[in-house]
Length: 565
Image (cartoon, rainbow, N blue to C red; front, top):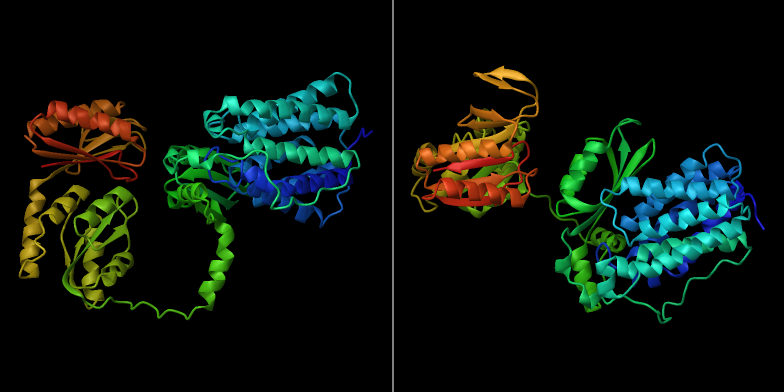
């Protein structure tokens, strides 16, 4: 019978829990199909708790507070995957509840388990039931109920929690359609219960388990062949740690942004750092945004679609665990010669565009641009950045499309800094740049004829842009309030409104008045495709004679960039 958990006992409980899940990690891997079929939940959870084992073995915690704090801090930094981050949050909340305690009795430990569940639910943007969250929540509730009924024996309280946890686990198959399709229980939930099993075994004085035989047949295994890579909406499993710029920095704006570009978002933090897990198709954007809140320390990115395909085919699944071998192979290979500072000419003409947004970059490349420099409104690239782009293009003459009035002069400075001939086409907007590229004759006899044709094309397009007001102001007869939507046309304020749809309607009417034949709507990173398609339908309705295209620009700042020709 145990009525108090000391620091030393808590340490041994965590070590035993780690051994329990490590022994069964492959069985957990074989269950994993939610949130995506990447098959590594057992590995992630066992490696996550292993970081706590490493740190605990370096200490002799005098109190349960100290032991729980060391565990939580190590788990935060060592968390791998969605399941690992949630596990770290469960222990983070538990540690918070045990703060200041020398020992913990049954009631205190049960309350701490429940605090851990609260921390996990708060951190997960869209909690899904039928997962480890459900299992941990109902297990903790039972622990609290048992302790509240007067039970002081920690073994009985934890055993009751585990009993209810396993009953809940059995129901997860019916709770979650993905699990039902694969015919298994939730992998994260089972992993968590295995850790609790180990902790209970330590309370009972039982020996630690040895790692399971790799050849041992599994009783339960997910049907990965039934799970298609197409079931995965967001391809990249992205996990990273950032050292905070300030201890009290708010991560809510980051949480909102990450939720807009992916799913399965979990953020864990302490006073020094925060850890993020998110599934997204643009992991680079996630990392860049996070660096506004501190210094990036570590990142892991894995393609879950290729992992799912390999699992279904019975192949080896590539993961970041393979990187050590890859690094060793690369380091043993002869070093490559550094690339020349200026690419040798392989053709007469080359084209460089400046824009922000993956979609816009793709448009320029599809039209024949050899390179794209990232930049635009509020983030004008330097002359050095443009020059670097020019020098990478293997052409005698490089035409530069600044696509912003504030970038033209910086681009023009490149002419004196390179041996290549640089021609700056004075495009002030992205639509002007796209129109210029569409009019290029790649077989023209000389650079001047290309320059004349591209420059002449600029007058055929009208550009409208929709952004937002950063502050209250009174401009050009418009009373503008912070947060209002602003429409610009040819660089001048066209209108302002609290409704984005209202501004789009006014611009569509304007396009109709111009008898535009071709209208392209490039929607930005903050616009959902469904909303953009509705905007396109509005233009089609009001401009029945025009050909309307809706394309993902991915640009920041502007909700829409609209080209009217």
